[in-house]
Amino acid sequence: MIASQRQNDKERVRPPVSADHLREWQDSEKIKLKNLCLRHQILYIVVDAQGPQGSGKVSMLLQDFRNHSEEQNLSKAYLKLEDALGAGEGDVNTVLLLDGDKTLSPGDSGTLFWENYCRRRRMKDLSVPLTDIFSSAFGYSENAFRQVVLLHEELSMDERFDFEGLCTSAASQMRMHPEFVSLLQVVGQHNGIRAVVVTCGVARIWEKVLQREGLSYKVAVVGGGRLADGYVVTPAVKAALVSRLKKNPNIRVWAFGDSPMDLEMLKRADQAIVVVDPTRNTSMNDRLQNAIREGFRGRQILLPRKSTIRFKALLPLSELIGRKLVDEIVSRGVRRQKRIRHATGKNATKLLMTPTRNATIHGPALIKAHRRVGRFLATLSMPDVVGVEGYEISHVQGQKDVGYRIQHEETTTIVALMRGGEPMALGVFDVLPSALFLHANSPQDIASNHLEGQHAIVLVDSVINTGKTVVQFVQRIRELHATLRIVIIAGVVQENNTHSDSLFRRAFDSDLNMDVVALRISQNEFVGSGGSDTGNRLFNTAKLT
Image 1 (cartoon, helix red, strand yellow):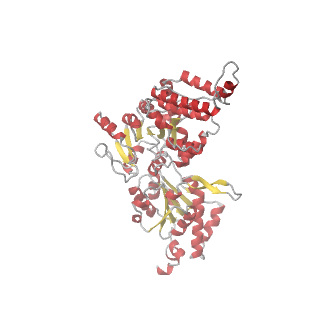
Image 2 (cartoon, rainbow, N blue to C red; image 1 turned 135 degrees about the horizontal axis):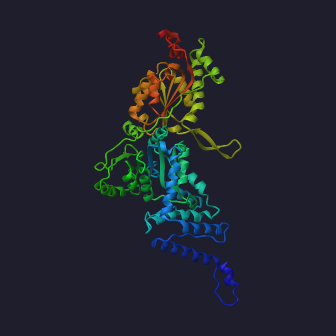
Image 3 (cartoon, rainbow, N blue to C red; image 1 turned 45 degrees about the vertical axis):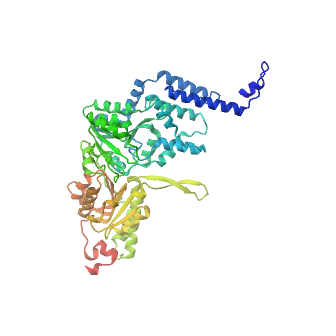
């Protein structure tokens, strides 16, 4: 437009200048103006006034600049926290406030967001603009985080900018620490506990991560990313949320964080947990030392667990999967009633159970029948118990499509309780082919390396009679990992195990991260022996007894 006006100017002779040269001139001025604004802490955004969103965007920006204040920002963050606590706020007695990036996950969602943006635009420079903002005079002030939001708004005027798609891509690359997934599954079973991810980054990314992990209905997110959110989360806001919660004397606040940005939140919490990642820089060391001299008391956990202790002289070490820490967190929670899942009475069950009860069927034919039961129970129950996740497949019509598999299949351990549980366990293995498969004659056959980095363990047995054997396996697992999701799959569970005074039911009720799935509940208390024993019938060994 400028080039055309210069060329058509009848009142003044102007030297010819190309549109490309003028565009370079404009870009140069934008860069210089941006750098000046960063140096002088002035919020900055480029608006395409000629674009379809131009006038609407200017109006929205003017309203935000006119109305925004630190008080208003904090007020909206408080409202979001109240929504996260839910309608039963009066029943809440424990709140976990968790930083997201580098705490719940080793990844950084903001970095992934911008790297994906640069790749989609085929930009050679994958540098993250967030670094320029936070290393400028803005530091980590409220205006620094508002400047990040303005950057998102600036790019949103480009039709090629897909905010939702970039959030989805970043979320797909984020992997939560299995230890935190297990912990959040446990606390999610308590009416009196709320877990909230408080992120200075883009809230939408963490919402998608939690949804993928099957935690979205248990864990809320407080964070921003766009003007429409109405607020940004800063280190000061994180600390203020703790203070807000502690105004209620009945609420105990646990805070989890990893960096100086989380330190004020950690200092104000009733219980503070510093998550130590060896790949992080040492920016936390000096700040921690100063805080401890001022009276800060907290604990540290190592993720991965085999990491070197960084703050050995400063903070005592705790185990995130340890029973002591978990019991301490959930001790004040109200336990939610759970049910044993079973398919008793269903027509499909009648078909599947018939060959398992038929005295004329034994050996390979019976093994196949038990394997079908295992496959059926895993297909029926595992999607509801641990969730499903999507992955890319090639559709039969030639295009790419989304397929589904059991959530965390590769980090699930299937344990066949020998020997009667092996055929059913192989049926479960058919549904989770990437899982770790383990044979166990006794609880001691389960070692810590079988559980390290795993999300779930599936114990498979053909029949649970007294429940004593399964309880011993559960106790062994809990010695090694206090929060790992345990799924027990059995063809038959004797009804006496569902009674509140039974050994099995007491163990079940005391473990909120354990699920039981059975083909049927049986009122027949008969315990097989000799030719009626399941193991003997499966492997034709009755004559050896």
